[in-house]
Length: 410
Image (cartoon, rainbow, N blue to C red; front, side, top):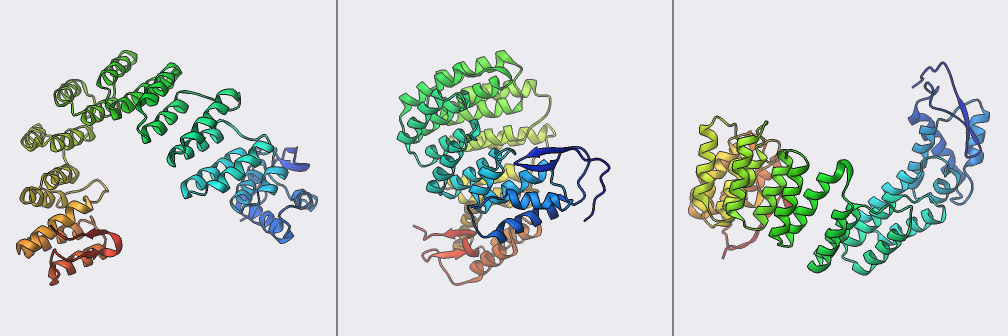
């Protein structure tokens, strides 16, 4: 694809004349970067310099923009050509590219490669605050507390590694994973001390959630009061607080917060009623859950299938499969907001109906699922075959290639 540009501003970068940010380059970014990338790989030597290839490109009258160099750097990093990316393209903004690779390695569990790349970044002096945060999170994921503590000490001593409220929240999460709640509380105090500026309320709400996880009710309420004193709470604030109180099994407190929200909200957010319905189900208060749903409907509120799906999950957890089936039928007959019904609850309902001998209702529910695009054709086929089969609950029934596994009934 050919693009026309009227002006070109040349700057020096990596010993190569490259176009600045004015106008557009004569070739599309994709074609330029692809051609340069091919030239690099044809070279064959992963340790040789890429600068001669770039210089030849420019000497032939073609131009390279900073954006294209950054794109090339990212591709080289993805292709493990770290020497090219780190050495030859160092003046461009290579750090975000490397950080993306660090995140990828962390997600894939490739920690040796992660450490190798991070060491190269340190040697090239291109680490930034995000680099350290990514590694800190990686330590937390594998509960390497010694590694986390060592890196945290390095970050506290290194001016490049910005230590803020999120840093200590990450460390608190690490200690939470090993149930060291004393250290969690210590990290949360440090995190709260560093909460400032526009992110202050977000920090307080995050800290509040962590206190709920470790069961500290007093701190949850203290942080809530601090949040509400900073700014009028929004729907997200109420969601966090209700989630915290649900974790603490604070029924009365949750109902008071719900009443406060109902008296103040500017925009109805169905996530809040959904939270309360799930909480009521968790607490075994199904009558309250159903009464709340009726009150919402009587008040003209629009509820979708997710409301009934939550109720079905609650009844299934409470081993009331008759009501779980009724709620699931309502759920799949409505819009689920782009989501699917809870697979374990759906399969439990189908299994229950099959064992009960009510195949018609089981198939009716599945038909509603496929008609409303709640499950895939493959899942529908697998579940329908199970309903029609002679397979009983005492045998393993693996449905839909991993859609969900139906384990033996007891």
